[in-house]
Length: 449
Image (cartoon, rainbow, N blue to C red; front, side):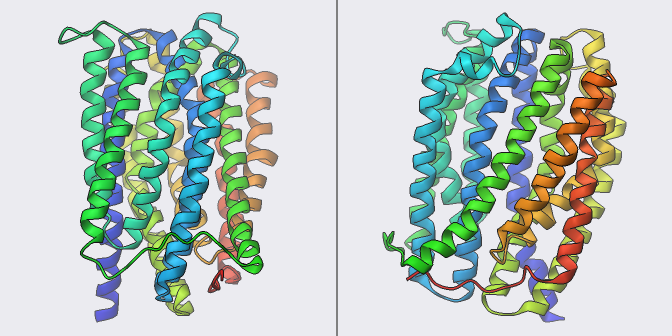
């Protein structure tokens, strides 16, 4: 009984701050969306498309952070501080290199990139200007994300939450000032939203670094700048890293194909989808903490060879996610009408957005199960190739073909296109549950010396 109480306590110690962080970020995103929503459908679509390409980078950095989290959690379970250090610094270096590559692409080829998403010349120019500026936020985002992963593994998840609150407040305040030209600043519109994102990311990064060092001084953990690995260590590391990178890249690429499908249906359809993004992120983010808790707690159990405990606790986390997502879906269906009315867009765009939210509410519980099971539990043992294969099958063998058929062959409206392509989530969940029950994902990873 005492052990179970301890598990609940650890779940909430990690899950609650992560959930609050996701909710706050998403809430501020809604405010940002309302502000930019006053600029019209083209601006909304432009920001949505520019942000969608940035999401490829964000997803890849999150993948690197996921690898760091798997390794750090397992080595903390093994009480191996040298491997904890190596896991952190190797992944931080890789994230910084990725930031440099994406920044270069966005700085020098923004129009070419945005030309993939839309044929509308005006929307493409807006998106390109947004992308060129927002690229400067990539490096601070990498540093913040990796530090947050380490702090969560150290069971100090509230510190990234504080940095996130600070960054979100700065972003919202600067959006108001720079988008609309308040307090003597020029009215910059979409560019103002991009500048606000860059400044707030840099501010949040600086605070994250400060909070980390303040906490680190009081802990027994001592990090060394260890980068060198043995040949077997490199093979093991790449065996964990490459499937996650491939998985997240192809998943994100699939999401960008979906966005291109929406964009080519029409600017109104693209704007309607963009309006729903903050609510989708808010709903999923409300339960994101369970995925993070699963990755860390199950990873530590596997690192200490407590396999049966890991399996039973995994099932509990999935049940928590199912109950929570069901409740949120009901709330979303009831509140969708009020949400779409806050935007200054055409009635047809509002109606499309409301119907998209209904489709999302239906599929949301399945999405949450995939997030907890595939994004947290199955990866925690380092057998990341399982999730890569499952996600590839779902996105590219089902989601993308169904989306293309629904949009361009059956010529359905965007709510139906979204719902039909989202059925790939059901395929992924079915395969993931079969893999989970076979228990082949449960293992302890070795050192990298």
